[in-house]
Image: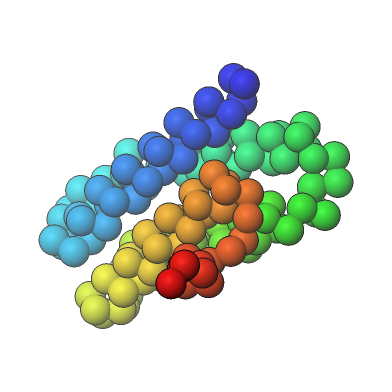
Length: 129
């Protein structure tokens, strides 16, 4: 239970940190280049990753057979790529803003998958007529 709480707390810290850095990116703030801004998210993300792997191994010995976990892992990789595009300089502001929005959408889907333990996309929902 402690590991799950640590994982969820780090996920929340990651989201808050990413949103703050994204706003700073859009404002061209010098705070984006501050040493703490460049270091602390990596520490939190490492703890998030280690706690997630620990949860997966403890809860699902053969976690690679759980489709929702594999989908979540793939989405984490997409989130990382979008985050790198959004927060690293060298691309235009529209490209970075689009990558930032995409990363937030992917993060939301990761949370959805973790909560529901399904890989059904919201646009696949069937509504009663």
